Length: 199
Length: 141
Image (tube, rainbow over all chains, first blue to last red; front, side, top):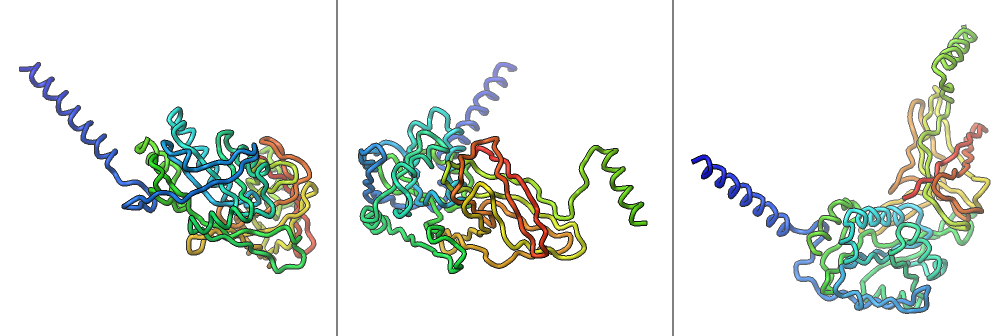
């Protein structure tokens, strides 16, 4: 009788654990989820090494993508710091994720500067600095808006301008489809949980 | 009586081993690492311990070409960084809080690399002529 009770307890425990695990897997992603993910727009940018980075070549990996600029001292470093935390949290699983930062400031950001900027956070992060021509194509394809915001104050040096850029990061799934957007208030823990679910 | 209060403050400070709190206090100053010629943001809290308002008018650093108070704002899904050219008044007992995603000091044209553990010297000028020196600790992200 005691053996039967113990077996029943084990079966019930395993059942509950299985249900919880399944419901975690089935839980919706965070951020703004696209119900019918469509193929991500093309993204091809020459890197500091002279080779092009081609987003489509990363099919099979999950890609987190953000449009910012290296003179952005506040928001962009906060996003990259969150990504660093996400990568650390994923451990070895992070090999299945590509973190890509695309500059929208072709006047000041070179491929070398942008690569050094993102690698200050993690040596595996990809930092891309499209030329103005490349950026125009990318912005149109991704429906991204960005523009210079020049201070009217005469005391500000001319090269000290801001660049308005999208606040959200893009989540591209392993099939190369745009799966979700993460607004800036999304917790890095939630992003890590989503990636773990998708890996 | 004033002398007695001053003496009491000095003695209390000596007993506790703590420096007396300055009338304009800069707390928890930090900034992110940056390369030479690069840009960083400095964050801190200025507390006005005085009985009258104080106004932060300009900022500078001996190791940067340009230092300016900025505010990051999110509007309609876009991030904007706007310069705060107007002097910032701090009421008695109140604070000016500089933090991520909000008001910050944008420090551009660094004359040297700032690595974790370094410090970034800052000079804060107030409209009554007072100058407060602060050092932001460089913290790795």
